[in-house]
Image (cartoon, rainbow over all chains, first blue to last red; front, side, top):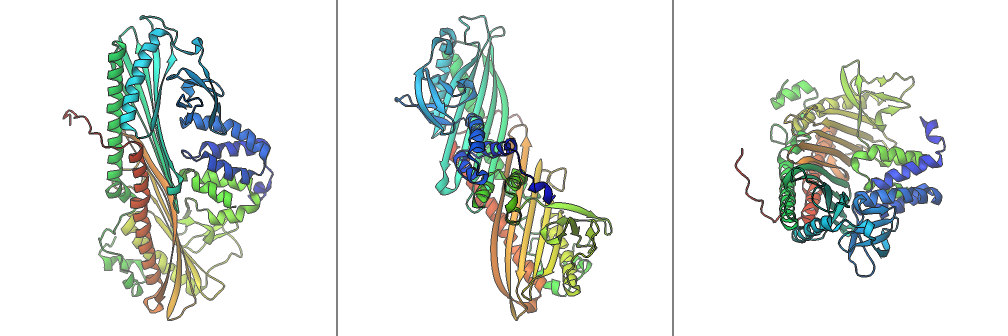
Length: 304
Length: 255
């Protein structure tokens, strides 16, 4: 075994390991991980290559939010708004953000071209939904960001064809000084089905939290749900979709609270009880006289 | 080395084995430091002589073999392997028996092992280990957990025997738990913490009594701080991200 460990790793193997560490960094901690990783690797070429591949994956899966220059507000880095490797559409402002993944910064913006934006017909639905979701996010998340993208059928010009919108909501709270970071991410895929005049919603909700003062404890949750509603006018559709999302997310938050509530009294007990079955501390003192298990069991009245 | 430990503090605890093996392959020259500073979920072997299972760790290992606390034999067999003195072995046997009862009471199952060996300054060191699989397919009596493990490592250095003897305890608990149901999806928490406790205790009470009480107190503290502090902090974080102030819309009484 010792000999295997001595064999020198190839650069490709090192890069693979480096990418694993970067991609598995908790919310908001990839820069810290990369700093430590650089020291451990001690090979800038391998690190730079790994970083250039891992950061885009991390940024998109964590739905990071970056400030665009020129007062355009923030852009979410998501696979739904990805036009090219480093170009991300911000549908709210119809701007395209040029992103430096490794620095996690938006360096430039340019206006989106007509081809990059949905048709006027789809845009009416998208824009109405965005307005409702913005309202909801402002109410429910103290520091939330959201975007509504058209991911399918953006060229549809009039009723008669299907198209898809995706709602992305992301909230992150980073307080490394308090040894705590966390993120809330929800992605709602909405299929506008023209033939049956219905909308199918598929939601994916992900929550993570990391507390690391003298320890390392992480929460990781995942939930998926579906719902559907009627295909109506843009404004009515937007209101009913936003209501469904609000209802599911509120219920999910309640179920998280419930999981925490059950944790200390029920769930944790299956790992270790707070007190022994006898509900009194273990009688260590009597172990001086009792050296055999059987006798001790009898003493405790729990003979097998 | 510091950077490597920094990485271990950030990687998801449930991936600690992958993270450690990655670090070992990147830093082969630091392997002994890494192995001694990073705690990993415990492994178990079966002792054919006694029919019982025992826990593997650095303290019962020699070469690639591990000594069972039940039969005192190395698995696989090993010539010229070290054994505790017969006096210490006697204490080890008692400790294993009593600790099994202790674990039954607190863990309602699980595997335990205690190992002891002489150290260089006339005292000895004892290592108490517990491994519990609390999943519903394992030994979770209540069936709440899809997946659930608790690993506890307590290492006690016992000073030279005097009227009051010094006991230095270092404890680590590693746990992971996952619940899964249709209405709320998967909910998983994992983590590890390590704490120390030093005490001077009258040797007249007996080493087992002294060590046992310290371990019981420490396990209680660790469990409590995981439950209240560590899990509590992650819950606080979730509530900061999305405050649960909104009142849930009335649900139809369908149940």
